[in-house]
Image 1 (spheres, helix red, strand yellow):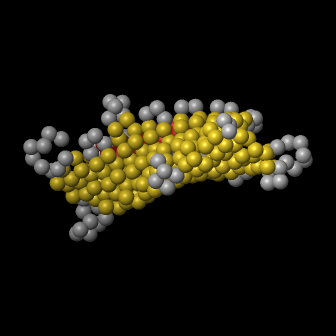
Image 2 (cartoon, one colour; image 1 turned 90 degrees about the vertical axis):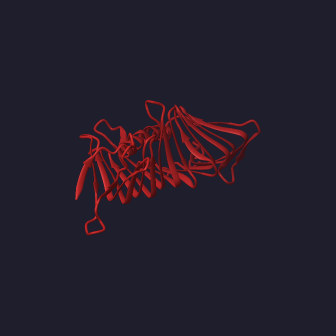
Image 3 (tube, one colour; image 1 turned 180 degrees about the horizontal axis):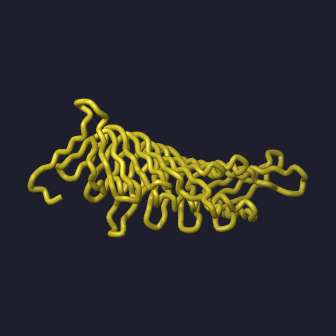
Length: 274
């Protein structure tokens, strides 16, 4: 049994997913400056440990490469020097008061590791967040980014907070949020799909949607919420096993899972304006 209706919460779900692509695009730019020189400065000291093949910068340390900078209380840069002429840094570690800046995007945490050879970056610590002009992404455990695969994972009650054109706040929250990027015809990295897993909660100024998991596919502009789906607007309630929305047609559906107890259910209270 299906019923067609407009689900604003699901549309907001897709909007939040599509706009996090901006953060990924900035992250991609941040990790693509490998051909430019790397400059390290510090207010304290810059130590060269030749036996261990590393540099240590302390007290307001800053590593800058192109339009990307990594600031921390302490930076450790591991390098290779095979021919005795060229120093090639293959890993950068940052400890305490970490801030990564790329164009209009900032990332904050307590520790950061970027393995250049593996194309893997990890940000951990308290108060983890990625911020841009109109959006904030937070997580309790860590952010992970694979540059080659084009995958970003926010783990630990990850949350996307974004304001709409009216200045109202929409949020998407889940145990884990994963974004996958791909190269388009022009060779640019664009959003392919995104997944939210575990205790998904989508909140708009008028509705709250909950479910076990959610996905969004950019090519088809389809979003789907599965597992004990509930949509609340005031006292009104819609329930089902799955809900999906087609942003291209603006048609949404709520599905049951069959059986006498698997039907779609809607409870509507008279006298409610919405």
